[in-house]
Image 1 (cartoon, rainbow, N blue to C red):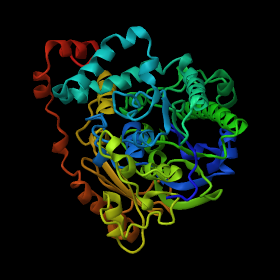
Image 2: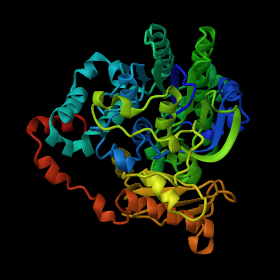
Image 3: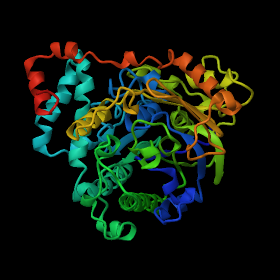
Image 4: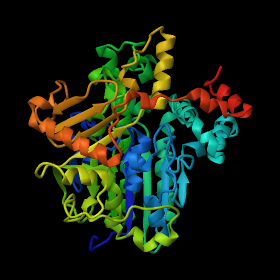
Length: 524
């Protein structure tokens, strides 16, 4: 453990933010003056890798120290069950804990807010008529009846539908100031002798983009958000084309959203400095995943594991870390152990008070430890540790998993059908993907489309696939992925495994549930 634990932890996730659009990572537009200032006293990590390309499994991994295959929270089963979270451990250790977010996935319904003493999430700010209607009923039905979990592949889309409806329009930018205000109030009211843990997720940079007018005029002058494509499924299905000028407008709106988020985050940072809490607070700033804006002919953060999605911004301020830039490989899975280390808390010390199993503190997973990522002596390695230590030489690897995306696939099929487009069986949207990534190479395994290997040191934009038979770096990365797959239960290489028998699932649903599904648009 760290010898001088800090009192407090502020953990900020900039949802859907690309690394290359931030000042600390060399972006030429001044989108993030506050983060650039923060970077001067933090460690900036260039090689941070997310365990998945979307919110739910990434947050579940950061909160539990487990890979997606281990914690099981994904679109097919969007719940974190019987697992003690980071917040649970800290709360049981007498820390005040709070979670503030406008992300539809970070709610009591998915289990991600379990352990937080205070939480204000997307569903708590829904209009009353929506909260009391079929949306709430559908979620409640899933939570209250075990057998209805078999319908999760349909009902889980509710969260995405709600977000798409309520996050759109000119009022979408109002959430982040409220999140910051609630965070300040929580910190101000904290009376714990141990300290506080505040988790914040800021959603501005997630589609659709409706930045405040001030930022829009600076970064996307003359652009009306209503005039550009704000639905990634329209483009990815082939139903909508986007030209260079429109892409430029979309990227401008995205930059404006990031600038607004940066200003609000700076407001929180300034307040912590003014109130004398900055020096005793560990601050972690990361993105859960990035976004594609036409690269690889894709829009959004679905159907791929390219670096624009999984090589994320990651900055940490702590006395045990130098204000510097690091190029070594780190994983967001390591956030769990890093936070425990920062406040000198071990799950084993509070285990009787936990509801569910917690991963024990592991110094080889803490960024603050001198043993960081020295996996050789681990007695009970996790799948990533096992895959690395059984490898060739001293090479290090990060691992990424992406199960078949139920929600995105549903919406993609809808857009394609509306446009009279037939999606082929080997469309990448139907594929499950796993990847291993080193600092120099990546290998992506898929069950319906060809595998992809890249030399990131020579081709950072992943434009030219490389066959492992012709490149030892790519071949070694593929071998690392194979070891990880074996450790988590085998490779995803049989497309038939993903075929859902929806008819049998629906046969068990009562008429009330069928009515809810009809109201939500999933049944005729």
